[in-house]
Length: 449
Image (cartoon, rainbow, N blue to C red; front, side, top):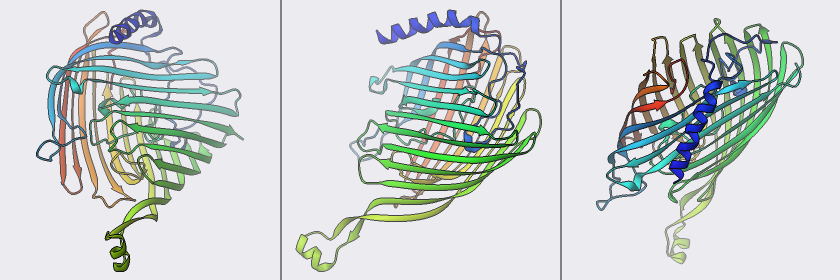
């Protein structure tokens, strides 16, 4: 019944919001003041919505799916972690776009799905993701930004922002999950930017976040951060600056916290009208409290009848905190390349970790009736508070949408990922294939990636 009501709601929304999709033209709205290239420490995204005052695009679709490599948080009778492959159907719902007023911009990206597998309904479920960013400029000197991201999923293939309105490296959204397990997450934060002069600006802000996992064998997370920076625009298209960030992690299911102090130098430049490069180079001081096993003295072991004990352990690490991003937004294409070497809260198995990652994506709508998209990524986690081997994952995917007239689109998507834990102690390769039809009003090809 819930599925039927949700479907009917979105079908009604499609007809109402169709009038808001002004073909997403590339005619820029004149800006009162160019804000300069996007700055990483502020979570800014290159090519922010600037095409038309209203450009919301809804969609609803039904697809056949194949998932290979589903891994539950359990073991089989032989003591091994099982892997399952299943065929099923998936209903997808979504709404993405932005609305621009004179001093305010609202960017929204919602996507959700409902899955049913033919052979094993125990894996049926839903994934939901919502990103909402509100920017308000009450005066030429002052700008407020509010960010909210929330969702729940058991498979994190869908955790990408359709329009790129969310800087994936800025909020502490979960990623790199090893198991297919229900995850609930919420991130909320805000920034205030004050422009003292046309060249000099200051930012203060903070955010809070939580992650909860359904399995009692996996760690959840609560945390917050406070940050500030000063930026100076050397030229119209080049900005340099300095920032500081304090981050706190606390984990469920046990004793474990981390305090992280990070300082970085920022550099942002607009190389061409559509090409931007941003980098943050810095370092972080990571203080962690955790539990560790220690051998007891022979006299104490004889008295207690055990040979090991548990005690609180303090650890201190100094690690790089480096991020770089290259983005190009053309009339019919979008390209992005991202590198990150920083501290990460982990994935439910790994706690506070040093993370190295690189990823790229490309989307093209220059062929009439078609949209093509590809992406690839690599991530490596090295635990700072646990004696675990390194975790590495590799992923790649691609797909297209084909306009079939009157708002109907054919959709095909293929993805593959490989995980390696602790020097090949656990290997996992999973695939996903999706083929279906999606309805979305609009005069340009539907862009789902």
